[in-house]
Length: 276
Image (tube, helix red, strand yellow):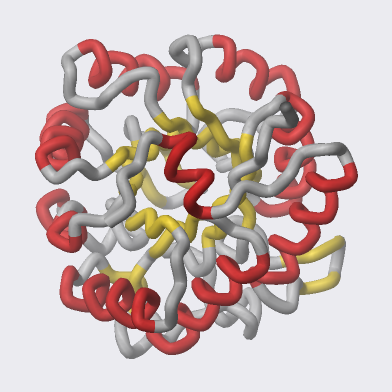
């Protein structure tokens, strides 16, 4: 049986701005429309960040609630994977996990601290990881363990060993961030080799590394994240028109190499998610 590929759409993020592309969804209506379009195009999972009325990233629980409700009201059946990130350094640790009040099917868990580019340290102390994982477990939220370097694999495995995350876990390898793991096949192979046996894993590449990392992941039997959060270009010098355009390309490539695209319900079965 071919290994179905689960596509995650990262539709807005907490870094990309309208200065980089006019096509980034910023308003609530734009984010909802992008989520629905991504699902209809082939994404089984929508990775969701929130923006306030000015388009500024936020971890405001009320805004997350509105986004989740509106996406569901549109009939979108995608797995919603809410971000517990720092909204670009704007949210404190308590604010970051307030979105779990929505009891989403998934939420991200960035499994360590990292120099994020030239000016910011993305802080994820282990006590925060422990508390966030515990909160997710109490709510039956599946953590997506985000890995920006090899030490984060060790942190994730510690949480599994402590019983705070059900093993072997769901992992997202984040390659190409300045200060993190490089976006090449050797690094991907190294990280995959250190995951628990049987782990579900996906990979993303930042900026110009996006398509290359997507191709590596498909070839290695992993899964794929794409979207305007990670990269605003379709090809060199040409802005992507939408998240859907980036997803359509992965759908086409996956089918051409004999990997069917998983539906949201197929992805739930693969990830051990009970549909809300």
